[in-house]
Image (cartoon, rainbow, N blue to C red):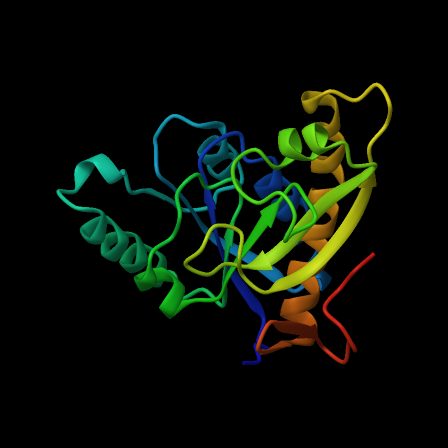
Length: 211
């Protein structure tokens, strides 16, 4: 698979939207090659939607509780995303696992605050600390139907310091994560990308890793 046209981005959020803001800031420069065309959420009244509104970006909300089944919500969410004809969807702190209708229709980029495949799931930072690792980091991946199991696009290491607790370490990881996500999204839009099995290559990269 290769995507080489200018990047139309739909960003999905569930909370404060700091990754979204980083993408909005980057996309203000035309040379970045990406335009955020819509922001979607699974709940109302969140700062992520407010950030989009302040940037005059269209928004939509699809609450799972509004549907009788998960399958109906999956179909509705995919339809809302499709209305904006994105080249790429970014799950930026979106607290729902995306279903087949979305994953089959669009490439979806996700982030995780650990060096996958180590410490997947909702508590990657806490689990890394509990394990006593000296280095952790963040991962940008293509989402699939599993939990943090998709092909890895890029990773960056973050040292664990002696006095770190979960909150302090997580904030340091988030700073790296925002920068890495912005870099990868821009490069995918400008240079194109391919997937072969579990190997993701951007442009002429010999590997799918950024440091």
